[in-house]
Length: 216
Image (cartoon, rainbow, N blue to C red; front, side):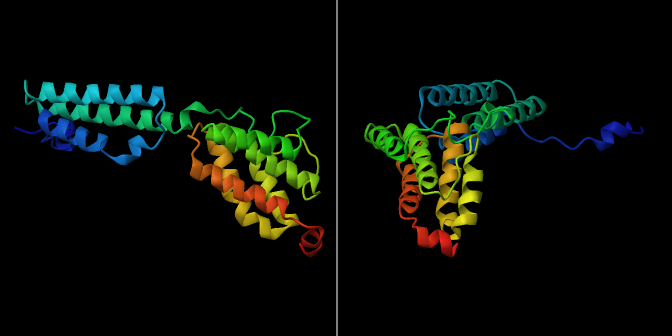
């Protein structure tokens, strides 16, 4: 008997529900799924994933239907991808979100932002501290005339403009701009390590001299 052409094209399926549950458990154990912070929401999502893994395990003991197991495995992996992207902030940002450094046309002084950042860091609120300290850095560069007073400048535009004026600043400002954008607009968690990168950029901004501007 001649096989249906579609049947000949279909790849062989040889996976049981127990295999699917094992693969799902293996996937869930990867460290990437725990790198997006330890907030109440992320812990709740973790509980849901654990529940799905347990559900697959229970179903595996009741049936050995490989087709259903494969479908459940693919569905779980798809769910995991969505959850990871959401926890990483990719799905929580929009193209219409303005990613400017300041949220006002009249920024405060660098000293004011710096003081606020230090208070936030001391309280363990590193996400807010990253935002305030990078604003202090950009305000400092503006006060030292490395940057002109321009509203609506993004973090990366600040790096590009400052790098043209003082090339030596580019390498220290770039990682700080990345941290600021990820934490403030990408919903990535603020950490002491990320805050330290922004502090380094701010300290570099405070050391800019008129001589460096002339040489740049």
